[in-house]
Image 1 (cartoon, one colour):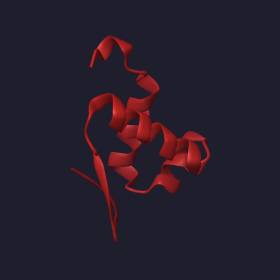
Image 2: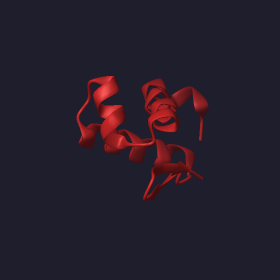
Image 3: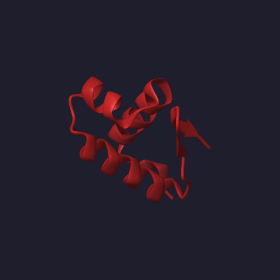
Length: 63
C-alpha cells in the first residue's frame, strides 16, 4: 500500500472514531451520513489491510 495514494479524509474519520467510538457520533461531528462514515471506514480498512476497529457493546474499539 502506497501512503501517497491514501485519501487523507479517511484519516479524519479514523481520528474521530478513536475519540467518539460510535459511527453515528462521527457522522454528526463531520456532517456526514452514517452510511458515508461506514463506507469511509471500509475503504480505510481495505487500503491498510486491517480491521482497525471492532464493534463492542461500548462502541467501536481499536484493534
